[in-house]
Image 1 (cartoon, rainbow, N blue to C red):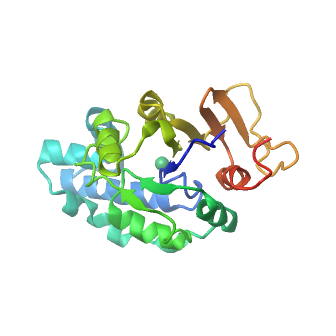
Image 2 (image 1 turned 135 degrees about the vertical axis):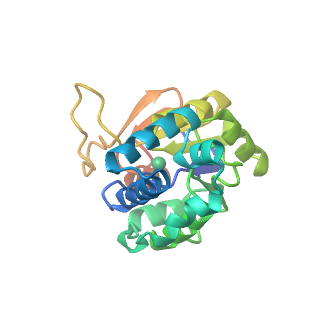
Image 3 (image 1 turned 45 degrees about the vertical axis):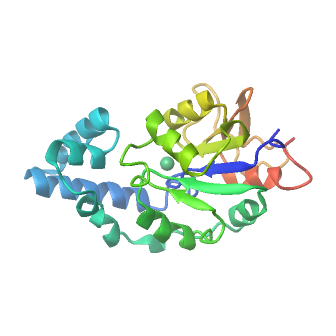
Length: 234
Ligand SMILES: [Mg+2]
């Protein structure tokens, strides 16, 4: 199924580490703290402004730069106060990513600093050939087509031989249009279906095929591990 894939592209937050570490909450809280301070508003006001900025500009960062003329590095300074020690390596994921054949990239709407802090704590500091961050994307985030175009050009990627992993389905639309295999990681089970048992090795019900080259995966370490062993996906 993935025999023709020689380029592996993985989102970072909520993909290379599962929701539940608390890091995403820390980031959201810092961003809203920044908004509260900048706009002189309370928590609810900050939430509303954040939602408006994301709806109009893709990310809070881009919205602040566009509408307030703020400097990216000033806004991103909040990352330096995050506690990354909440992240822990997943041995199976580390082993599987190390074993993937071909080039491997992290494609994040966060900054390279964020990736440099997070990846080593996940045991993945040495396993990627490159990180494409929000600054490399000229502040145009996923899911805008421009962002993927820059990524593909920068690393000379053949999209038809690439697989793209992200926890947000909306971020997989453009990769699919470009001809990549797409893997939607985690999230809620489809309505009317039970959440698959993440540890069900016999049935491997932690993934499902949702299209010709589209997968939905609830247990990324187990999925990648199966891909890199002779056993493969059943
Ligand atoms: Mg994500």
